[in-house]
Amino acid sequence: MNLGAYIQIPFCQTKCTYCNFYTGVVSPARFAPYVSAVQTEIREYQTRLASAGIALPGSFSSLSVDTVYFGGGTPSLLDPAHLAALLNSIRDTFRTELSEVTLEADPETVDTAKAEAWVAAGINRISLGVQSFSDVELKAAGRMHRRSDVYRAVPILRSAGITNISFDLIAGLPHQTRESWLNSLGELIRLSPEHVSIYLLEVDEGSRLGSELLAGGTKYSAPAVPSDEVMAECYDFARTRLAGAGYGQYEISNFAKPGFASCHNRKYWRREPYLGFGAGAHCFSGTQRWANTHDAASYVQAVAAGRTPAGQLENISAEQALDEELFLGLRQLEGIDLKRLERTYGTQLEPRFAPLQASGLIERVGSVVRLAPDRLTISNEAFVELMR
Image (cartoon, helix red, strand yellow):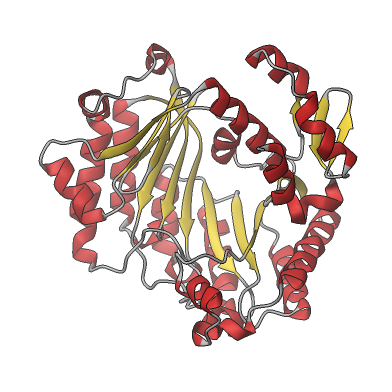
C-alpha cells in the first residue's frame, strides 16, 4: 500500500451554475502566494499536523507517494512552473514512486506550451472537464469552453505525450435531450479517451442552479433541466455505449479502457491513506479524517502565521469504518467480500444484506455481493437500506 497526495487549486475563470465546490474567481496575482503556501504546508506537514493533535501512524514513514492529483477548481489555470514547483515539493518531502500524476484541465486552457511543460514536470494524466459536446448546454451551464475547444485540446495533449486522458460528462444539464446526450457519447467515443467519468447533475442548495431548482425558479435555465427519468435513461445509455466501445465500468460513475482505471481515486474507494494539501483538501490516515479550511485567503494566512490550516478532525470508529467499507465497496462494480469484512470486524453481515437481496438491489456470487447492474441508477436506495 502506498500513499496518495491530493493538491487542491480552488480557482476558476468563472463559476459554473451547477458547481457546489468551494472555489472562486480571483485575480491571477493571488496564484503565486497560494502556491507558496501549499509548498510550505507540504514541507512542514508533519509538525503542523502534530501541533493540531493529528498523529500519523508510524507506518506513514514507510509509505511512498505513488499518485498525485491536482484538483479544483481549474488547476490548468496555473503557470506550469507553479505546478512543477508543487510536484517538486512532494518529491523533496516524501519518498516517491510517481506512477500516476493527474491534472484537471478545462479544454479552453490547453495550449501546446502548457501541455509540453506539464509533461516535462511529470504530469502523465489529464482529466478534461468536457461535460458536454453541445454548445447550447455548455453555455447554459456557464462553461467557458465550447465543443471546438475539446477537439483542439485533445491533439495538443497527444502530441505532447499524454497517453492517459479522462473525459467528464454530466447527465442532466439544462437543455439536454436524449438525442444531444447520445451525440455527446458518440463524439466522446470518436475522440477515444482512456477513461470516462459520467456524473448525474446534483441538485442541492450549494449551487446556483440547484438552489433555483429547489425553489422552483426560472433562472439559470432551471426549467430546461431534464427529468430524473431522462437522466437515468442517459446514464443507462452511457453504460451500454461505453461497454460497446471497450470501456469497462469499475465504479458507479467511472469507466476505463483496460489498464486505465484511476489509481488515485481507487485509494478513496478502497479506504487507502491519502494526504491533501491546499484550501479545502481532505486527508485520511486510516484511523482519522480531517480537512483544511475551505477559504483560500484564510488558508494562506494560517500557513503564513505558522498555524496548521487543518480542522474538522474525526476519529473513525470501527463501526464507522465498516459502514464506509460497505458504502464505498458497493460503489465499485467488483463488489465486496462479506466473509473478509466479517473476519476483519468480527460481526455478522448477512442480516443487513438479506433485505437488499430480496428486493433485487444486489446480486451475490458466493460471499461477494455487488449492486445489481440494472439497479445502479437507484443505488442510493440500496445505500439507505444498508445503513439503517
